[in-house]
Image 1: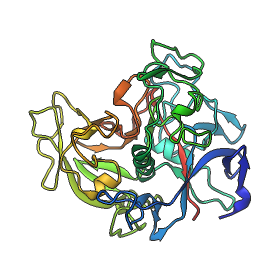
Image 2: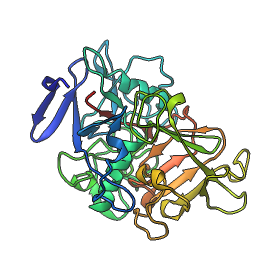
Image 3: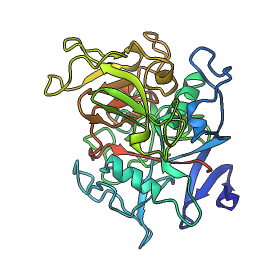
Image 4: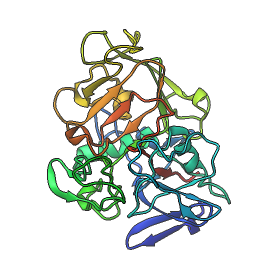
Length: 365
């Protein structure tokens, strides 16, 4: 790693992109974890396994991302907050570059592939480690928070449903208390909205806007994830440069019986498909999904324990038909359903709404 890219500013870490633009990041040092032994495990969490190498740390953007135009270096924000869909960024045929900085309206109305490309566009001039934050990296933070303290956030139209004193600075054209939208500026909700309750932490993991994450998807109900290698993976991991065709097949399906308002994980099949069904997706408390194996628990796709309300009352949304790409964290209307274990797998990769955002991450390669 080119350590000239790293600088400390008031105990916060900055890693610069290919153009020298600063990005505030949190250094998450490697830890071991498994569902039985927790942090006393001898196994590194899969977030730290990148193409066969166990890395010492991963670097997570402290703030939900904005994008800038490299020709002008101007941030390309939401110029029409009252519109659900426009202006949008779609697909990978763009040159916008992601940036993680405080006090900004997070970039929304961006689809999965556009968010991924904006993070990849941070690389160049010898820099190769920037990427869209992965589900494995999100899971590592979520499990850390579960063992310590859950962050609060913008999950109730500008404040936190459980502590209304937690308020941020509303983004231009956004409305505290409603009507929609009700985004706040990145990192302005106070220390309770950081994952570690410290200034150098990762902010807004609970609410504000849903975040696209890479390295996981549903294909006709089956769960595929990034593996331990870029090609022919033998286990789960965080190989974020791997092509999706080379992801690890968990062998686990999201199963629905066609009647109940719950789902389960199954090694057999997806049961009834949610194609044209009513409802066409299922929302269920994260704690209440049975059948998660160790891989799903490590990746915070399924609960470590069921029925014990140990995952912050966070909810999950599922559709076992077609291709579904994950979002994490919830947004400003989700109340108790938002949080670090909140997971949405009911949208396609082309979704682009005023509540969908993302954040970059970095690994030294």
